[in-house]
Length: 324
Image (cartoon, rainbow, N blue to C red; front, side, top):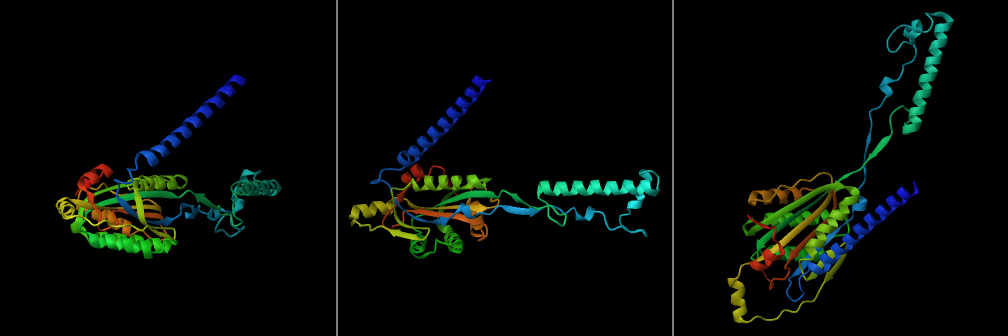
């Protein structure tokens, strides 16, 4: 018996050791392997906030058993009449009444025992039971032509003025961002979406994974507003030569905007194959209510008007984007 117990403990130890090692390796890959060199990567902007710890577990009350409880004795009929059972306990007389009393005593004991086991209420109804909340984590990424300067300016403005320290403020940010995207469909070029449904304890992990992957695609964040903390880096703009200006004009350039949400409940986003799919996905994000939203991240690159994201950079950094 002892060798078997020792073998089981040894297997559990090595299993946890392998899991921890894989987690460390994945972290190093994400942090050091996916982030492009700072001198070649574009800058990014970021808005975010919220917490999965504010998600309540949904509760429900099971159907009450009160409708099945015996009613007061009534010799004139109507409702439950215990005299019906007298023939089964001696055929009447003292023995029948004695049997009925025994039956009622046993029944009451059983009911009280069941209520104490499940924590029943005094009125006979079952208690409020806790049910784990379903959490959905979803992401929409939109690749727009760099000519969408107004959208770029709207996001920069939100980053410096928006309230990211409250759920109400996050919902307003999400609505304003989705509205800005819907107002500029002529600049839509690429898109993709991803969504997962999980339990509450895994929702934050999935959300952080998506955010980390997106943040790793830029070399620096020059403007950010996260959980009420606004940070804006001072960026020096180097004047461009005429040849460089002509190269920028002739080269296709883009802006990429990514929205990541964590909500309570189910949220299914269809694959983005065309403009109609992208419009529907953006509208779904924009309709998320304050009661549903748990966490939000909006990331965009580049945030500066003098920077460009070339077609080659777009393909290299966002290979899963689809042309729409």
